[in-house]
Amino acid sequence: MPTTSDSAPGTPRRPGGVARPASAGRAEAAAEYVAELAAAVEAGARLGTKEELRVRCGVSVGTFNEALRLLQSRGLVTVKPGPGGGLFSAEQSPMVRLGNSVLALDARRSDVADAVRIRDALDPLLIEDALWHASPADIAGLREHIAAMEAAMGTADAVAFVHANWRLHAAIAAISPNALLSSLYANLLDLVESRTLAVLPAGEEPLDHSIAHRYALHRDLVDALERRDREAALRLVREHRTGPPPEEPAAEL
Image (tube, rainbow, N blue to C red; front, side, top):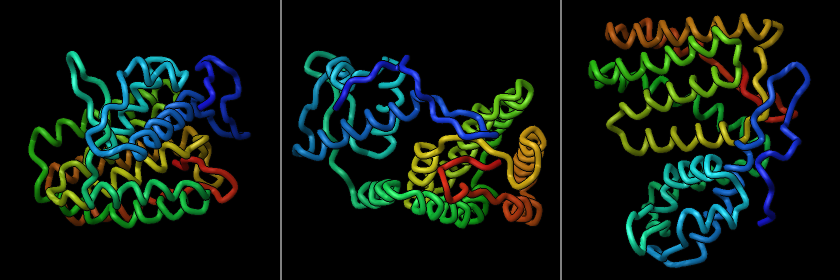
C-alpha cells in the first residue's frame, strides 16, 4: 500500500458543499489494507502490532485508530494487549460475513445510493424497537448526541453535525435486541460515512436552514422516544429522508 502523509493536500471538495477531511478517506484505505491482510490468513493469525501496521499503512496514529474502529465494527480483527499481543484476524460469523458483503457494495456510487435507501427503510423497524426497549440510560445517551449536533449547529460545522447525526442513528440502532438488524444498519452507516465526500443542503434550502431543520427533527424524535409516542416517532421518521446525489457520494441534510 503506498504510504501517504496525513498532511498531504487534496481534501475532496464539491462546490457549495463542505469538504470531508482527507484523513477519513485514509482511514478507510488503511482499513481496507489491513482487511486484505486478515483475509489472507487463518482466523486467529497475528497480523502485527498496532504500530507495525500503522507504519505499513503510512498514516498517523489518529487515522489508524479510526481505521481500527472500522475494522472492529466490521468484525474483521481482534486486538489483544500485552506481550505477544497486537492485531489478529477474527473468525467471521455468518452475520459478520453478511455485513461485510454489504460493505463491499461501495465499489459503485449507485450502490451507495441503494445503501442509503435500505438504511432509511430500516429506520422504522429500529424506532419500533427503541420505543419498546429504550431505557432511561439509553435516552440520556441519545441526548448526548443531540447536544453534539446542537454544538455543531452553533459553530456552523456541517461535517461535525452530520457525523453527530450518524452517531445518533447508530446509538438508536444499538438499542434494538435484534442483533442482525442492528448489525446490518451499523454496516450500512459505515458504508455511507466512508463514501461521503461533502455535506450538502437538501434541494434549494440553504445549508444552515437544512441543519436547523434536521436538528429540530432529531431532537423531537428523541423526545417522542422518551414519551413512548409511537405516532409522533414514526411520523418524524417518515419526514427523515436522505440520499446522495447520483454524481458523487455526499451527505444530504
